[in-house]
Image (tube, rainbow, N blue to C red; front, side):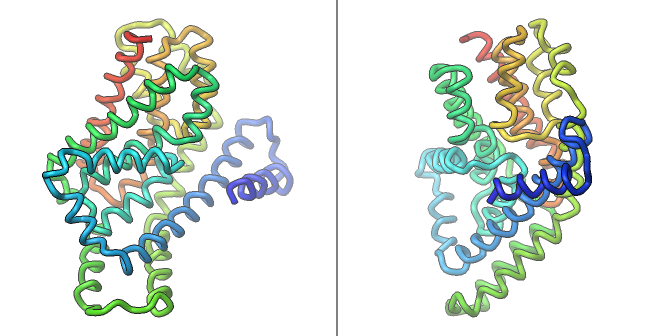
Amino acid sequence: MFNWLQYFADWLIYSILGVSAQSHLGESLDFFVFDTIKIAILLFVITTVMGIVNSYFPVEKVRNFLSRNKMYGLEYLFASTFGVITPFCSCSSVPLFIGFVKGGIPLGITFTYLITAPLVNEVAIAIFAGAFGFKVTALYVITGIVLGILGGFILGRMKLESHLSTWVQNIIANAQTEEELEGEKLTLVKRFPTILKEAFNIVKGVGIYIIIGIGIGAAMHGFLPTGFFEHYINKGQWYGVPLAVIMGVPMYSNAAGVIPVVQVLVAKGVPLGTAIAFMMGVVGLSLPEAMLLKKVMNMKLIAIYFSTIAFFMILSGYLFNIIL
């Protein structure tokens, strides 16, 4: 389906609108059309699936299971592992984040998934292995999983549920009310129209954030050359790693898209750990993701989330530079 969307975006921008494929504008517009439609579809499909799950799967049992202290942190490992096997970018993982919160999954565990999903997935692993070898790939995968576990655990301990947006809290309240009033489970046929309506309303609710966020990411993707970053982070100064993470945040790409850029940076003398820190900033803490999260969190929670994860990304970059 995504291949079909790419063909559609190419056809619309390059054939119908006549924008050159070699121009910065053409690259940005093509990126914008493809990712806007992709994320809107993902949001609708994932929300619909989560609606079905919430209706027929004992989510309260999963919630209670994941909330037990006797698991000794394994719940975070499960969430991080699930993030690895789902090939989503930072913006694409937000819809599933909404579904987790709606289903009552503890916020810290939900954050673990949100952190890990864009950083590590099978596509990124395959490309990373081809570009840097299995030793570096294994270290990167382990780092991504540990980063998700530590970040989610710390954020979960901070009890940040009150900083979820009113919109999300209303969704949670409505879901709980429906559960209490149902008494007995309705058939899928009877529930499905309501599930579709809820999914459509969620897409509608975050639509403007999708457009603005991806618009920013498309502009950065098309108009900022690789050399812009290379100029500032290729000298190996102590501040290179944190600067790489900060400079990566305004960008927007998935791991598969940014790994070739990382390869070019390394080939031109940028330390590997610094280049990987840049990659983590791009795929794990994008500005478009922040725009989407604005719909589900207040600014204080977004700032806490970004600051915590950026700190661990910086530590990871330094670690890579020391080890490799």
